[in-house]
Length: 555
Image (cartoon, rainbow, N blue to C red; front, side):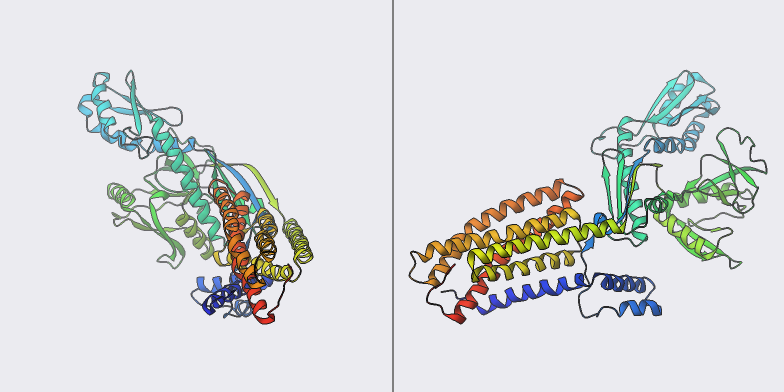
């Protein structure tokens, strides 16, 4: 007879109270957000806080939860970019980087092939002429020995390069399987680098995902404009170490075949002629930190991975007394003379840096260079005013929906409708509390999911109350009617909500962007609705019935 054990009552009230407590920070959004930003900044600074940060931290009590529902791009405002990655650029760089290995392989069979020289060719193709055409089979075997298996599921059993001959010329290019695998790696690397750069800017809940074969969608709430976002992710920080061929003050000088003419950042008007193929690149870096050189000037310490350290050490050992250029984004920042063998895979970059510039350079080098150029196909800036309009419209829709539901429930079921309406309020707070706890992002479609949940939340109560009405006509008393109403309506409630939850799960798994935002709030709303309908409303009814002990009830 409507007996609910004490431990169940404690759990139900505890969960409702937890939902309320987790929801409260969202009612003071701006000051809690300021508090959280200050706490994060102090943690990043090793616990040292400025007076402004201490004042911001004091805006919200530390003993209360400070989790917030993150606002998406359409609610907070921000920038939207759709970028196309020029994956073909990677083919050219990859083949160009093979020239030293091909040259060394052919030198090992010099008696059979004679001298070798590189010939001009289109991007992505390496052409090497040999002096003795009759030694072509030996040359092809030597170059093909450089091939490695393709690292991908679709390229199993295939090699990464194709080596053919045209007369006395060896032609080397990437295989089709390797191109497909390279495309996938390039997109994944671009995604990771963009994500690191956006995260370093301290933005909240960015959306960075692949679209199609070679496009990336980037949405960052809270950033000022699309141009600001482009500047953030478009900084390449492409670092290379190139052999120096010569110097000149003529900006129009001809650097020669396979060479580059690059300006010097140290000396204005000075240009360096460097070999196009670098000794090592920034991809071989494992760490970069701001530091000071022996003259107490800002600099950047760097460390290579084992492969890069070996190549860098071999080059310095064989070129003592020769200059080499440290090239950043097609400009020479330093061109020191190699004084001795640099082993261990570490070194220092010096130049006319300020402390801020050396720090920023270290950050960019750690984040890595974008593997290929990106073309921005679409860019939009969503102002915070438009986002606020969306929030206001969503709030109005939610209030209207809830008001209509309350009027319907109270008009249809009287006091039972009032108890269902109170449970609906707890339901909404449980939704926002859960979103805050998991750090979910609320978008405009997400608000639509909440509004839909409000309408669906009372369905379970309607099923229960209608069942109680039927049982009142046959049962021996109101207590038994209420108990049977909840028992017999349970299966219908569970069936209806399980099927809807399955749909929400499918939408989350196969959808993206707005669809996922809708599915998250819908799925959470289903769970909280079932909880409030089956447990919270029943607890209200049982408590009221035990207190009033009515002889008859009207539903």
